[in-house]
Image 1 (cartoon, rainbow, N blue to C red):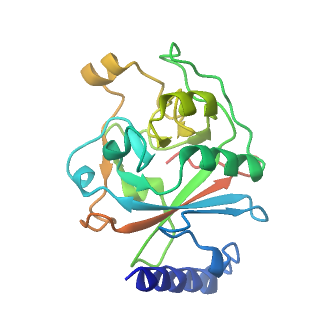
Image 2: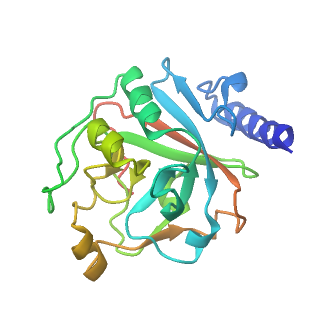
Image 3: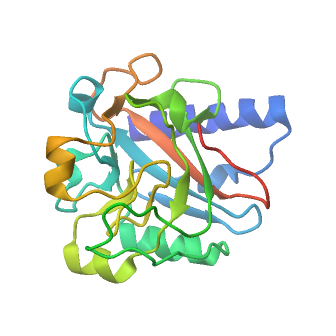
Length: 225
């Protein structure tokens, strides 16, 4: 089964490369469950292997988008990652991304800083690369502007496993600058937004593979939707 899944992902990437001329992916180095992180220095991007948490295709989440499965908040994620969040942080450094490291526990109301990343997804069984807005539903509609917040020290201390939070966050390695950071109480009473996986594009199947691609944005390039 694992070999079949990898074969499907490789085939999808070959199709995308043929159609778009994109040679960004080394076919022997796609992330898998066993090897969940691939650093593509040439194209300044990091690829990680994740799986769908089917509960959050129906039940909204207010904060957690992508979380390491063994982190404290792994069960709260829409997508469970198989790579450690600290390894992901270090991979972004290797492609030249600069962290903001501007938020603390007391930074409610502020927005995450750091280099912007273009985050996209390849869903196993589908034939195209999708923006986050195509896989995550956002009730408030401000969309997704992912930045490299950094936060390695806080992430190591808190052990939440957060890789991408869907609002600005002082613990997550990357987070969404479209929404400010909130306190846990405010998030409970009046959240910035509510998020879930989109059934239109994500199979309603627990553990279905999704490859996430985080590319360092070129100067002037944004992806805020």
